[in-house]
Amino acid sequence: MASKFSMAGGSGLFGAEDHLEAQDRMGEAMEQLKIREEHEKAQRQAAQVVEQQQILAHLDAQETQFINETVKPEHYEGGQSNVGKPDDDDDDFEDDFEEDPDFLRLRELRMKQLQEQYRIKQENLAKGHGEYREIVQDEFLKEVTSSPRVVVHFYHRDFERCKIIDMVSAALLQHMAKIAKRHIECKFLKLNAEKAPFFVSKLVIRVLPTIIYFKDGIASDDRIVGFEGLADDMRPGKEDEFPTVNLARRLAKVGAIEGSDDEIEKADVGAKKASIQVAYHSGYDSDE
Image (cartoon, rainbow, N blue to C red):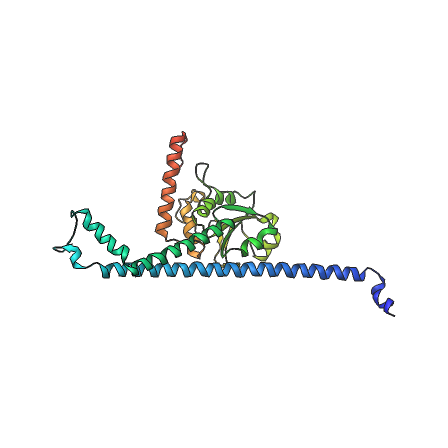
């Protein structure tokens, strides 16, 4: 009777198949657990970044208040600063700050916060931040869930507009690569949509190129489809020549990268000037 039961289904392989299925399920469960743990770690790191930024802002306010309250009228003469007075007076004034315990405490706290920011930055670099990388479908979940902020460009090799997302011209760095290098707080990836049908279907991607921002592994509803919002200010026929700052502003709007529009545009202008100088000294003409 026991023998007949073990041969259920008329095949002695039933038990082996069942065992293999259990192993597969166990492996999937372990992989999901690993991904969950990495996701939770990324969430904790994101919370740490926010907390560190809040503390730094608070410390800056405290330091400013401390200086305002410490600088007394006697440090000035006739309502004017001691400009032109002997350097010894300035040195004594600085020594007063250096010896003040409250000032030293604030400076020590600020140093600790800066060190923590540096540590988080190094961890981000170790996870692939700071560069624009291509991944395959099997790497997608791990890459998207291992960092709090991830931007993925879904593209097709034969689509001209996907290529334009990647570069303006040979004289300039890639759009995405420029932003990735400048904004370490976010990971920038690209995925060939043709080779990732599962995620293209899962994310309901209908137009290429599509750029999606993932916050803690969750896709934002505000995605960049085609050139929407990137070429609005371009002249007819020049839509494909939109500047990198337009893409940066769009990413900042959804929260993928930090920085105001002014900061982003200032950095972009600086990058353009640098590229023009490089082109000039190397004997090439810049199309900017």
